[in-house]
Image 1: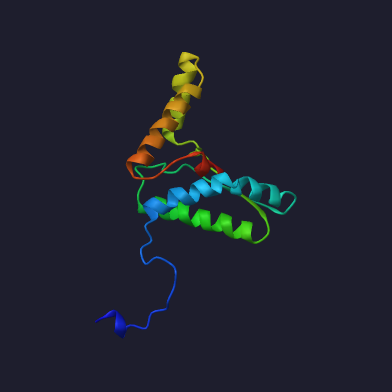
Image 2: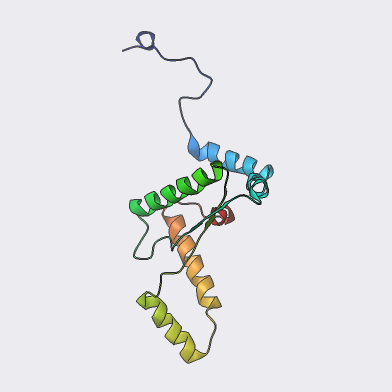
Length: 144
């Protein structure tokens, strides 16, 4: 079948998405025009919608279900923002008292230490794991 047999619309859009090279440019533009800050400022005083999220992967490595979960939460948050609300995403790390958390609490109580160093190391490990899975994790992601 040749192109002459297809009834395709004429458009200036590229047929190739080429996201790996286009996305960084798009994100840079958004940072340059301070898009997130402008959205936050524009939303002041509107009805609040806050999505409090749990840990990115509380029980095992990141997988397709984890990605779907994050995408759906992103869609819900953006829907409320576009629905004229002050919609924010708040990432969280609380596993609601999982056994490992309790174990860590006991260790730190014994040693009379703060958890801040552990939390920093744990956060860095989580970022490394996300990066190993090909995900970019920046301050932008924490904004929601």
